[in-house]
Image (cartoon, rainbow, N blue to C red; front, top):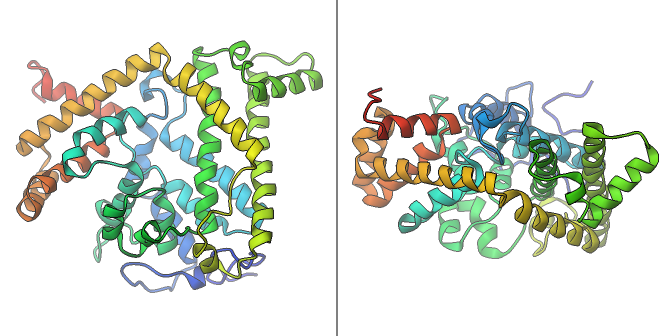
Length: 390
């Protein structure tokens, strides 16, 4: 029997190990049945921010249909894909899963439309970026423990949450932000989770777009890759049609990307032969990625979805309304912090005393970003409808 507190057997030399973790911001006792990365995963799953992902948009507003993906189901799918890749490559599955489950904790209501609106509102005060907000959630906003704010996750999990960061903000992130100043890389687990996110949302947006009737298989077959997958599926199963055919195509779409990623990345790792995770971090270029041919296929599919799904008039109507809701909420709360719930009002007063309007704006952004789609719509109704008193 393997002691859960020791390193997982069978890891590659360049995989992250809990016994070699750079630790937590606030030291804690290690007396536990779980290793550091397993504790991170469990803290994320039990957080309020994780539960709220169930009612946050992926592409379609949550109440438009029960079968469309949400930020929660997307995060679970990213975790599944990322764990598969990690196991095949001898990387740390627990760390990979923790990063995957937490990567969208900072996302606004209404998906990318909500983020774009909140970023525009926050431009005078440093902007808004959901990856940085995810770090802010786990470092500060989750209030569960008596000894510290946030979830006090390990460095390796926190590192994996920040995909991009301007130098001006990286300086304020301490050790987690150093790589953005030095041009180096995060762990291989962080790198593969980033790509697993892309695999999941492209593939599953195809599925949701077809389910919603916004695109058809015949239209999607304009993309050569999808045409090939459809032809192969029909050749193997001549009677296959409907949702089973769609499922087969989406399944093969994911498999193509995963297999290409593993092959190309393993070759890159062998060529560099890093001796440990810190040798990976010292590199100037990532080791996890697609082959050039798969990169091109990926870009072509992404461009098709952008033009035909994300810019579809039905989606555009929803995103336009969503942006107006977010802009209205931010404007109302920023102008009058007395409208905020007591906890956020007190925080806004404190931060404004310390940092002026920038501090007030950041607390308002925290409140709006934490809303679910449904709560944002309801809160907007309470603030704007004269007949709605509560």
